[in-house]
Amino acid sequence: MPQSGGFPADFLWGTATAAYQIEGAVREDGRGASIWDTFSHTLGKIADGANGDVACDHYHRWRDDIKLMQEIGIRSYRLSIAWPRVMPSGSGALNQQGLDFYERVIEGLLEAGITPAVTLYHWDLPQTLQNRGGWPARATAETFANYADTMVRRLGDRVQRWITHNEPWCTSMLGHLLGEHAPGERDLGKALAAAHHVLLSHGLATQAIRATNSKLEVGITLNLTPGDPASDREADQQATQTFDGFFNRWFLDPLAGRGYPQDMQTLYGAAMPQVEPNDLAVIATPTDFLGINYYTRAIIAYDANEPLQFAQRGPEKLRGEGAEITEMGWEVYPQGLGDLLLRVHREYGPKTLYVTENGAAFADEVGADGQVHDPARTRYLHAHFAEAERVIQAGVPLRGYYVWSLMDNFEWAFGYTKRFGITYVDYTTQERILKDSGRWYQEVIAENANVEPR
Image 1: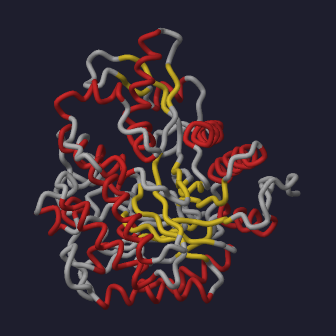
Image 2: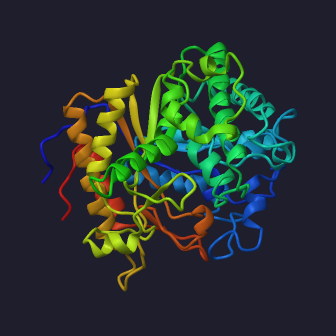
């Protein structure tokens, strides 16, 4: 039986994907190369030596995937546009075949009664732009704004909600400091320059979109991770504050018009990027919503041997302390989502919030009955939906929730070794099997309530 309803009648239950993770067809119909094509084809970068050349073959199977969404009852679908598919060199000539693909998908969604939400950048920078300096180069920000304007001019009559960037932290820090994502750099100065130019490009794109069509909704999606200190020691408390600055405030503060956090500027010192006089005002251009991606929290301890003097508690220790751990090595901590939404609402006050990603990876297998039974994922989602319900009742303007992901896919540096989908994908046959969690989500949407798992 459903619990007492705490979701607004117009609450957007959705699911999300990203172009490089599902589309495949990387050399078809004029698509250019992206930094993820280059990175995934570099020996040793991907856990299973895989790449996104085929992925889920969504480029050819999108009609069936929309039917799948219809079956689940999805109200909104968050997809991303592959920049190199529509502009192979990142700027200049538009690839009409690539644009045609997205037009077909968007029109198919609308015909199915599913509201599209489009992310303009989900990490697949055209390789041509990387060759010119990538995100550490200021010119990339202006090029992105032109790309955003072009997409809105072509698709804005059918797409109301636009997300400029997905997870600037990953673009900048995973890609340019930790080297775990494309383009695989390990340079603090480049990482901070990339972060600044991604945020600047967001502001420029928001202004361009507003100028083209002031009726559209524009926002950005941040991956935010709350940190808790490992102890009451002052050193652990300070390390947690540093973690928060590194992971969360570095992006939240400038978007809210506060500039970059002073404590982090002091810590970064000479590695700080060049900030031109009007940059911070552009970055703080008002938006219509903030998207938040949440998966877990971090438990932080002081560590003098780390460059920023903090370390996260690892999965083995967490497991030893009794925590449930996903296949990604992440603690299952639903309360973190509620606390995070309350904090962002209280401290930053965005007009509207969406959970633009939330989900978990587990070792799913097809059972003897041909079905995929994934009770751990259903429990995970149920507990997180309860947190969403809690904060809505507390006054947080949460308007929608996008489960990650519609289907298993190419999980970046982990290749095909991690499965986040509510739909199972057999990568050999491309068969899709709706998992038990997907069938449960179907009930949630139909009831508009956090239905108790059976």
